[in-house]
Amino acid sequence: MPSAVHVSPDEIRKGFSKAMSDMYRDEVPLYGALMALVAETNSRVLNNDSDLARQLRRTAEIDRLDMERHGAIRLGTAEELATISRLFAVMGMQPVGYYDLTPAGVPVHSTAFRAVHERSLQTSPFRVFTSLLRLELIEDLDLRAFAESALAKRSIFTPGALALIEQSEQDGGLNAQDADEFIRQALETFRWHHTATVTAAQYQQLSDQHRLIADVVAFKGPHINHLTPRTLDIDQVQAAMPGKGITPKAVIEGPPRRRCPILLRQTSFKALDEPIAFTDAQGSHSARFGEIEQRGVALTPKGRALYDQLLNAARDALGAFPNEGNAARYVALMEQHFQAFPDDHEQMREQGLAYFRYFATEQGLAARGHADQPQALDALIAAGHVAVEPLVYEDFLPVSAAGIFQSNLGDAAQSHYAANSNRAQFEQALGRETIDELKLYEATQQRSIDECLKTLLD
Ligand code: OOG
Ligand code: NI
Image (cartoon, rainbow, N blue to C red; front, side, top):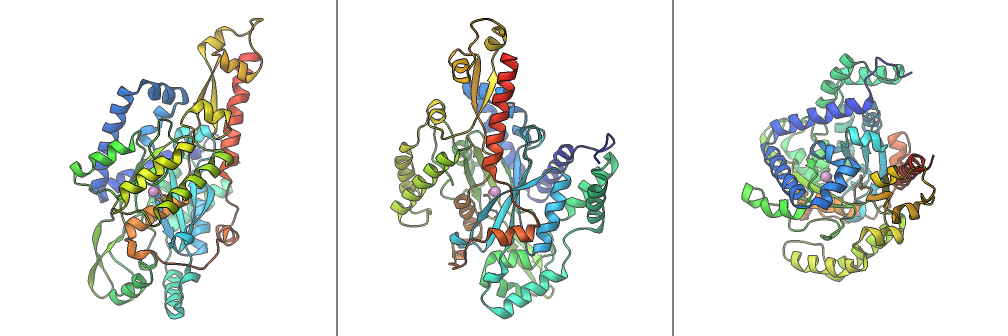
């Protein structure tokens, strides 16, 4: 049973997210430069856009903005995935969503571990995009067997982390001292290793199959490969990056720029080439990169279907994978197609395209108990007694994620896999089902309506 002496999982996650950020800043100096650029841009945007500042104050997102970041790891075996799921559970993170990246030529499928309740997200929105390599897609059977045996030999968790996961599961939580030790031990799984577990030739063979396979199989652990801060204006940061010595990818992934942002826009810069000691020679490996993201409103199934339809239409019209050469045309096509997506919160709400949160206003509170107080939600909104704010998207996008993978692995890494999406296999490896993110948004929206009506009408 959880008890009073136990630290809340949300606090453990907050501590872990901070520790991870500190470790990454030490290891990757450009990350510090990017964080500074994002913080600078965010404060400028908040100063210049009073509507956005008001919106973020009302939803309290403003308080989580500076600690908001996501990371990504790539795992090699079912057992690693099942154990990481238990490790993340200690800090209140659940697997949300299933992303199949094989159609885009990346031999993994993925989920995002994150907090699921708006209160927990408020304490720490930290998330980790977690991919599992699909070894069955390696056609060369000898190489597949080699990859399997290399992965079978490694243990990516410290004995201390494993013991504390078990203790937390048995006792229903960790006390403050154990939670601190858990953070220290868990961090080791995500650390960079300067030595590989294979020879230079073996690394090359794995890499020739797919660079991602070498990244997973040739190392002792699933190093965190990026840590992404949330910006309020991704175009401004993208434009300012070259001035800081950072070269971003050619196109921003996700929807085009809009007055009312939807879902998620992301851009990244290339992986660093880092010196590595193979078991028999010196060499180098690139895996770690930088990324920024801008989050907008979460879409309902209807809104998401429209997003997917417009994205696909724009990509079909481009007729190629977006790259440096066709970037301008891609942006123009996206803007053109997305004119069909209303760029107005009120319209999106009326048409059932997005999720929102509802807040009682001062005016509404003052009118409580008055005979003329409206009783229905829409009437309360019309009277200014209830304010409506967009519910922020907390998840990822498969096409965007594939674009981020590709740009960092090099376009040469594009392959074609005949394999089908295999959610059942992923969940079997995970040891549980993934959570449907749409249900989470629906529940958060409903809680805010219930709370609002209760405050104003009870
Ligand atoms: C993950 C790439 C996907 C995102 O934000 O969509 C990603 C990886 O490269 O391991 O980070
Ligand atoms: Ni990312």
